[in-house]
Image 1 (tube, rainbow, N blue to C red):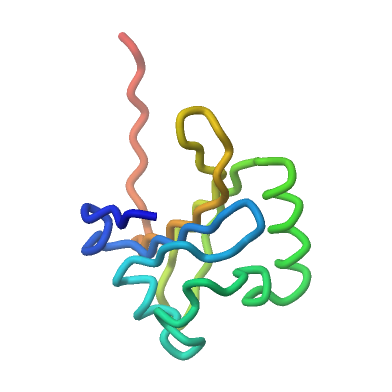
Image 2: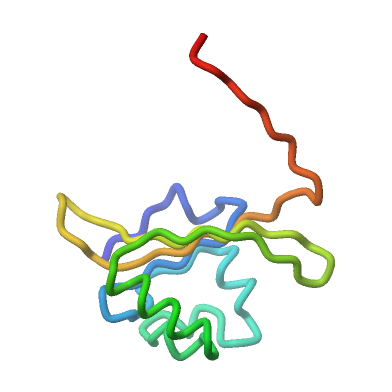
Length: 115
């Protein structure tokens, strides 16, 4: 798979896998985030092996049903937004991706009506 250069220095962590869960790509932020687990050496391994239960079963379900999942976590005092979603190429399901963005503890929210 050809690397997408725009995402390499993206501020959030991006991990892309194929339909079976094999990690195809990790951007620089993801490699640093998962350094203790192997960093770039994780490419080619199965991301399901990186998730303990019940996260593993939840991820399998999301991948099988090709559903998007979003939530926030806080770890070591840093709040993060997690976005997990199927990805497609020319309409064909190609796998799953996870983006992780650090967010402030209090995130501004704006309501923008069409009027």
